[in-house]
Image (cartoon, rainbow, N blue to C red; front, top):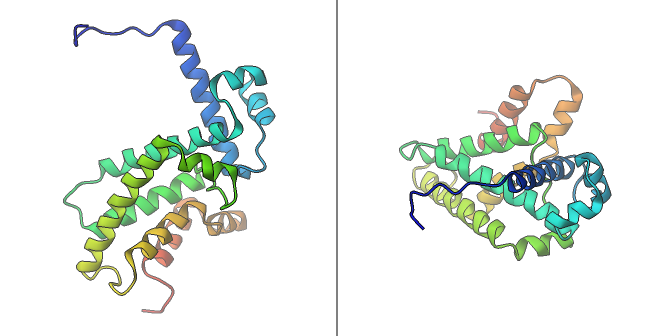
Length: 205
């Protein structure tokens, strides 16, 4: 085939792709709102507006549904990281990634991470796209953490892996919901407060 040949997508393929995207968006929102255990396949089908049998034509199980949403947000994270300027200080890039995570979570677009004994956890471990995405993100963040420690911007006495998972935990941080429910702060203020506690700590300066 000529590499310059444009491959046209049929109307049916476009419709199937649009439906699949609608399914993943719905699952993403439900995972953010209630988590994997509480979400049901019937609920997903109802909200998308399709029969349960049609849903299973796209995804074979509840675990596959949730994994697709997790892969989607991992790709979004990788896409965001790729936009950060290489010449920026490592700490600035880390702050930008954590800020992005907080903003996505406040917008209701961050799927809840599965519990240790969840069947979704096992599915994700076996999902090539998810694991490759996670490895790429964690390696990039880990390199920035080590560079920030070498520059004295982060505590060098702390294991880099501990700092990494502290940042990752912001994706499921209940503090954001508590502050939002209180009604005292706007989203941007909440992000600023959590960023401050995450990077500057709680000690008086």
